Length: 199
Image 1: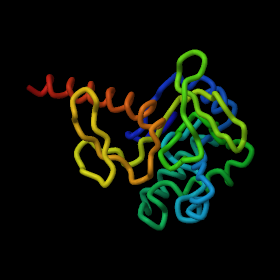
Image 2: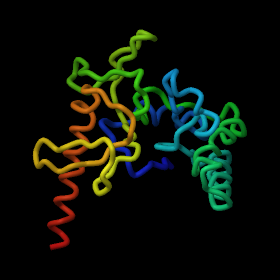
Image 3: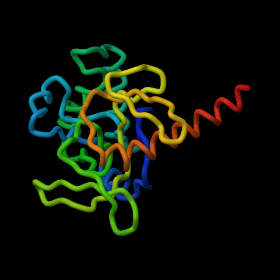
Image 4: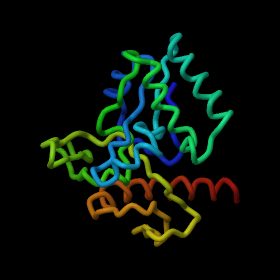
């Protein structure tokens, strides 16, 4: 079972990520904070719950139940919602836990990564400090994206001029043109379909 936040979107098939996940019982993506945000790990946790994995085995089921129970007991700022529990899950699961790789659950706070096109035309991820380049973008977490709430930062649709609220992380042009443009187009198509059905 994979639990996904509703503000996430697949840009490709997560075959590689599922391959990693199926070799363990529990998997989650790290926050991958850039250096200037690493100090927030204490209150936000090492892992992000934009997309987490539980195998249908004893450990996976046990960790899913444990997480559910903890979240029902307490889900507030002190626990960063359902998130800080994942630091404990990773420790309890031990060698049955895996981190999901770069390309999965990328997010607006990850300012150390750049986006471009790779050879086959897909969106790719690059990081100059590590020399990493050309990793396909599979899944993106559009943290705090909104179709209704005005925010300090907004994105205006090229096709319809509809305005979307963004998170307050500064976003470069490469992220907006290669990631947000595709996502807002998909969101608009979904909204148009819903409007037609409700009329």
